[in-house]
Length: 324
Image (cartoon, rainbow, N blue to C red):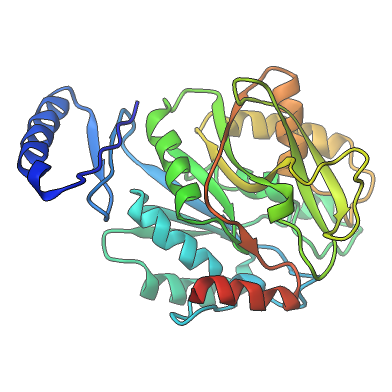
């Protein structure tokens, strides 16, 4: 359960503060927790003690031709993940986990140590190479987004959201995800995804892959289909509308997801066809879990505009948005 409250004018401040103080006292007596964001106009009542923010940053950036997760943008010269983290801190996140390639550990450690305020903590998690699977193959790429999340299992004891390091999600999107995470019990098998319109996520500079969502009347996911080769000027218009909702990997999970991931990883290994390129991806994993009735996924709407970088030429638009 969560409650949002906005103090709209000075006349109501005294009454609002008095009521809030009384409410906090009563709530704390029942061992619930009040989390106030930096804006001081948004209050969440929660049964969970904390929430965590995960950034998947182990990708090799083959189409970008560089480590885009470390590229800096805007007047403040922050990475895209750091812009997302600013919103996350405002929404009450205090624990941050980065899933990375171990070769980038020193750089990430230096940036995060300087970026995060003293009341936040971070941990670097190395995405496993799974050498037992690659004895006879020189695999270069990580094992996929679901595998990256699975690597967090040993440290994650609270509800958490998952993000891509190269996707700028926006203030409203991250706040909506925080609302969900504060409100859901840790033992719940109901998860969440913040969805965007396909038309808002295409690149003018080349094709992209997107998880296209099918949603029921109660805003729960019924299926997610990973579609490749989507472009602004031409895509499979016969079956996919540009108004379709898509996932940009802003997911919300409880710790219950790790049991499902272990099972999914076991099945994935049994069905690998190409050791060099097959990936244990979050879209296919969630699609199977939903269809098998192992979990539910609430689809959250947002007023935020998504921006991201797939190609070097995407930089200009991201810079423009951040400098507005």
